[in-house]
Image 1: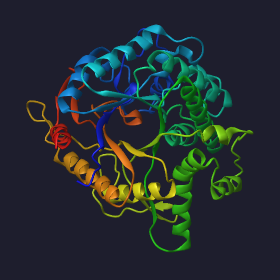
Image 2: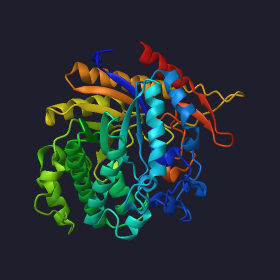
Image 3: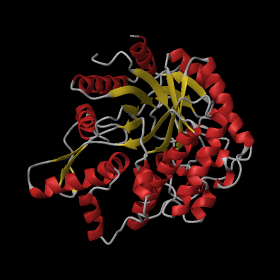
Image 4: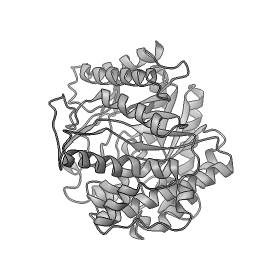
Amino acid sequence: MNLPDHFRWGVATSAYQIEGAVAEDGRTDSIWDTFCRVPSAVVNGETGEVACDHYHRMPSDVALMRDLGVGLYRFSVSWPRVQPGGRGPANRRGLDFYDRLVDELQAAGIEPWLTLYHWDLPQELEDAGGWPVRDTALRFADYASLVYDRLGDRIPTWTTLNEPWCSAMLGYAYGRHAPGRTSLADGYAAAHHLLLGHGLAAQRLRTAGAKSLGITLNLGGHEPATAAAADVDAARRAEGSTLRLYLDSLVRGAYPEDVVADLAAQGIRLPIQEGDLEVISTPLDLIGVNYYSSRVHSGEEILATGRPVTAMGWEIVPEGLTRLLVRLTRDYPGVPWWVTENGAAFDDKPDAEGFVDDQDRVAYFASHIDAIAEACRQGADVRGYFAWSLLDNFEWAEGYAKRFGIVRVDYETQQRIPKQSALYYRDVITR
């Protein structure tokens, strides 16, 4: 591998997908608890009420990570567990759980990597307007301070948001994720306020003493199918709304002019107030890249190229990750990049003992790790890799049908069984 000597390895999860215990120790509803109650919103009407029961099984899950040899664990904090209702003082019992988690990680020699927001907005804040409303960004900064006040001395790396594009567009524009709203204008208002909340929280954490701050974005490649004007413009618009809208504002302190013009043509104006972009572009120490696939645009259609696909229907395009990382390093110089999520859902078939010989997932990881090594060879500044995910878990609107884990979870017994991909990943880290 052409990976730098300081390259680091980890695994990732998120609170609502694994914790369960949705009504314990003072936690209140998030938008996902509410969304799961909507008929047909989630496959089979499934919920995160129990999920992987990580809230009660956390010590043994940390032991699993220790046995795999991972050096980093990227997890998220549940906002409604820490600050029920999204306002007011911290819930001590909620923070106690994350205190115990950090203790377990440190005892196992694993460095905690904390994400403040992975989509679980307190329902009371959604009732007050949600992310399309500016006040939610202010509430997020308050919440960030509460978490830092308790854990700041033991968490080396803090990231504010996970995939704000998904929160904004899947949640508010397209209705596929919580809270299930379908207004394009609300989606872009939410995007701006998510970025503003990120900046406000980053300022609070930096002032409080945080040494390593970042944000995580879901990014992929967008290529035109041909040189035809319609294909080129479709790829430009897709990349503009998913990549440049976020990175230009975060790194350059300005939204892309062509994206702003595209939105204006649809009657949409970002709710920018004076000083917002200075806040959004608060200097960062890293940016996380969540990569799963790339797309080829043929006019308004996404072109199927005949590549193998995952159980999510996503084409497997490892070379797209190489191109993306090289391009990011070139276009946004001075920013260290981390691959904070990468993985695949496949239709796992356990044997009689529950073991999954998931060679398809092993091949996926191998090809994408090779793609990162090639990007580093071409000059990309990539510092580490997190496999998604440690555990099979609640896969949002897909319920429990899609399994991304390197460890199989039997949802009836909650038994954990490392898959072949976990053993492969252990060996990669050892090498």
